[in-house]
Image 1 (cartoon, one colour):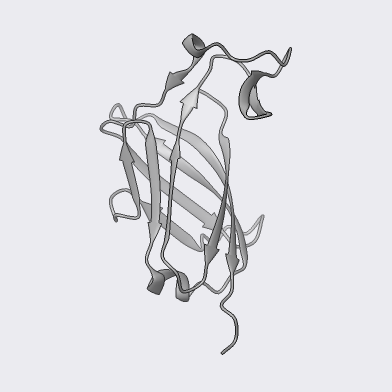
Image 2 (cartoon, helix red, strand yellow):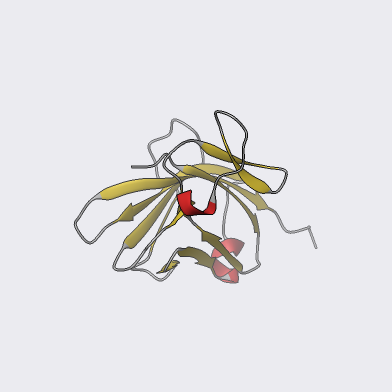
Length: 138
């Protein structure tokens, strides 16, 4: 199991939201610096042979968002079953219609994205921070 990656979404109220992310993992801690993936312990570049692309084949996804940290009420739940998340190879795409973003009443939310493997294993792959930019008053 790898540590969850961080996702930051900016959602424009009343506009279609669609964002695609590719997931790859390495068997040790790493981060992006100066446009390249480097090892946490020494800062040297991660060798290409250490990078393993995600494989979302036959997986399902679920995203939960809470408008207030510590609140147990889920404001938004999106899944691959309801068509709001699509999985293909190493890509995960999140999509909301303009009508769905129009009615968002919160301005910031925190959440998670979980992937369920065909075996039934559930992995938390992302921690999410979402910001809604409101429409300008008419």
